[in-house]
Length: 515
Image (tube, rainbow, N blue to C red; front, side, top):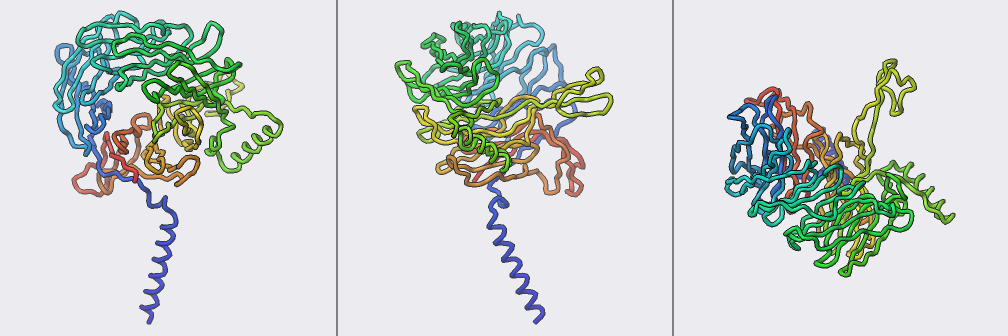
């Protein structure tokens, strides 16, 4: 009888535990990590450059600093398929003073740009590699300009270079077969920034987006379109409304004749953005620009704690009653526009630079500078991210919905994209990786289907334990279809598994699937 009672009690506890777990879907997690690739690193080893090549796989590259042969060193190139199995490995010798400055891929070809770090008068080198065979060829690119590179794209057997000459935007195109270079006209403006070089293979054209200051002292967005041969097709500037500046922008082609430019705007001559603009450009070149203040967005402040969000929204409502708008200033890093069904998604990430103060009198102080300035040092800690903003809009630039994803646990010395968007048939998944944890959130328009959940990066052996990792290197990247991959550097300790080192430093790639 006692055994029967204990059995009933145990069954009751198990049943309740199952009900509890089923009631909290986040505990299950919906991230799959079917495969992991791992390479052990020595202290002096270079990190890998990682280039996803759609359904072909991933190409890795790094410099081998241990070998030196007649002024050249080998660069290792390694191809992984979609199961993260090695397919081929090649060493290509490059002049010692050349460094990798950019890479891109088109179909089954990858392209790596190497630049001489000490002598700009020396030709750049482009290495073209066939991802199916590993076979390669080299092109020498003559660049007579003192050029600061920020963009590198490939289109139709040519390479496009974007950057700055004398602090002014410059874009030029190098044609592989002819061995000639063509500089794009209409871009070399003072006090302007190069925002995007968008290559459209279907339309066989390149769109260059710049932020410029006009003769009327307006800050706006300039759009220049070029054929695959580098000839200018269109050139126009957006016309912002009075007392408004257009700061940042991205371009998306709706069809063969129309475009949407989406980005951020501010008050006149202000540094920080106040909202999102959507500009619809029709086939005749006529534009319609629509502005959405951050205070008008339904979920922009959802990243805040509930009480703070409530206070902010109450302030907004009080202003509305008085016929006024509450203005918020944010730094927003705008990313590419993503097609979704018959509409589009704009993704941006809000951030702020974080500083600290070290004083000889009291060690580390607060964010604000010490009053004893002669005995303190004010230093940059990194960019602190707060949240991602996700905007849905239609082909005419009308706002359909907005949502957000809190990312206030991420910080970086360099501005980079953390959050990625996975649009699916009935929902949208937002996800990012930081400090060996993948965070996810599922939304459907303004609705939150599943709140923020957490999944650890899977390790190779059962008793592996991550001791430290490099938070500035690696992250999460879109791969092919609805597949992603996480990569980075980990210092791992393992005290139990037989035949495994006690301590090892590894480069890893994990395939990521969200179900």
